[in-house]
Amino acid sequence: MLQMAPAALVDHYLGISRLLAGQLDFRSAIRAVAAEVGHILPHDHMDVCILMVDGKYHTAYETGMSTAWGELKSAPVANSPIRSLLWGEVDHLLTDDACADPRFHFEGAFKAPIVEQSLRSRVHVPMKVQGEIIGALSCSSQTAGLYTIEDIGHARAIADLLSPYFFALRAAEQAQRSAIVEAEARAREEGLRQGALKLTEALEQERQRIGMDLHDQTLADLTRLARRIEHLSRTGDITPEALEPLSRSLQHCMQDLRHIIEQAKPSVLQLFGLAQAVENHLERSVRDSGTAIEWELADETDGVCDRLEPTVSVALFRIAQEAINNAVRHARPSAIRVRLSCHEAGIAIDISDDGEGISRPCGRIGGGLDNMKTRARLISAKFSIGAGRAGKGTAVRVLLPLPTEIAGMHEELR
Image (cartoon, rainbow, N blue to C red; front, top):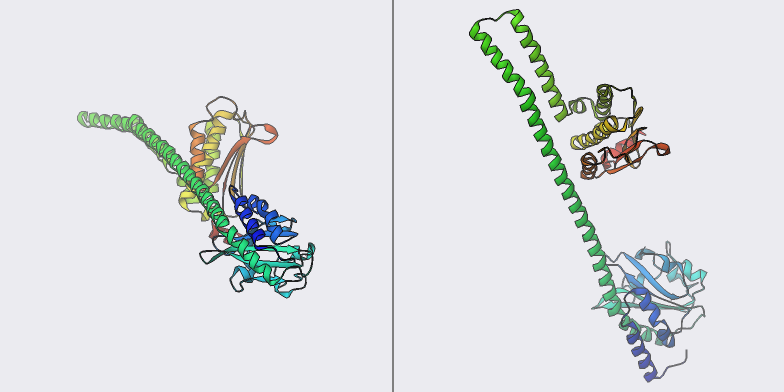
């Protein structure tokens, strides 16, 4: 290339500095200076390769020709044709024909753009900030033998101008990503906190309900029985005929107490597993409703549910229990279907009915739905509710990602 006068070089260097000012992202910065760089180092393609903070990946911002390099958000440095430069093994790369230069053609190298665009002449220099390599400046031409040793010095001067600015852009981008991650984490944490608060309130309401049931029903019955026994003791009228109504009342009291305990603690779940507990609740709910509702439960999990943590099983049961209760009490369905399945996405429980749907203002949407959502979130499961098949009825789904150890066992069983 023709040698440029020092004064002209200085003007172009100053032009590069001026053009960088105000550029807020990598692509606009590289495109803003491309013409000025072209006066010093003519090129058909120019890119700035920026190392990510971990140093294992990089991304490229290009101008001139568009190549596959510029389409990648990140790529392993180990596959870069200029990895020796990025690793600091060499202080520059200069070639008359990169299409044939073995330094760019090693196993696994992402070299396709070199061949596809015939990028023959290439000059590469590192971009450094306080001695640390943060990336590389690359200029390429389809003309073979274009660049000389003198052009390495020009490229280094340009890289020195670009490096601080691109370092600042990288730091700003990293800070933005960190802020987004932190904001998302805070949102999740706040969501879980609110969910836990709602669940705690619901549990407190349940505790109060149990207390009132015990006080107003069981305790009142036991008090009447105690007074009746005391009266019989005083009068001495303890006969089989006098004891028979006492025994009958005691049986009713014990039955009521068992019902209260069963509502508080799903013993079938602990004894027989999730599928059996859901089926038992479904059968009892339909029976107690006094209406003709067809029901069906299909368990396609091959026993995977039985290997879940107890707290997870209880949460899944409570979600299914609430969904079944809603269907029986509010939907007026002719049929309810429950399906437990296990696949790559995880364990799914689907509860569907052919009733009146969730749009009906019957109180079906409210605290129960909030509790189901909260329970799902607390075990990292996904919860959804919507219309059933053909827009009829309601379909509830809870999807729990399989824990790693259970997923491995499930794959072996398959």
